[in-house]
Length: 134
Image (tube, rainbow, N blue to C red; front, side, top):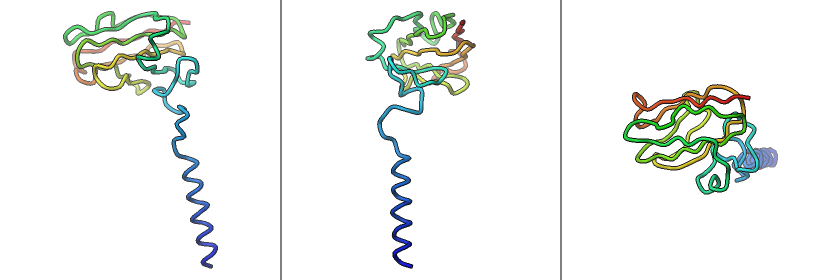
């Protein structure tokens, strides 16, 4: 009986280890790299990685407002978020989050549609929509 319990514990531990993060970058939009989209509607790309990409639109901030906050772009386009101050860009539907306020990031929009977003620091006054056309 004891041998079976030990075997089950070891097999269970091995199974849990297989479910852990392998660092391979899969699963969430935040982990996408510029040359391998995650397969989701929106990929968040770090500022370092977006430096070499072609930018279709830039959303910046001025005070507590987004500037050019409602761009229209084509599917596959990169939109750069370049805040001036403590702001971020968070999807109203949970598809993306640019991370720490004040962090620059790029977003690749992989599917046509409307993508409403807001600043989590100033949600009542800072909101916009990225429209993506075929």
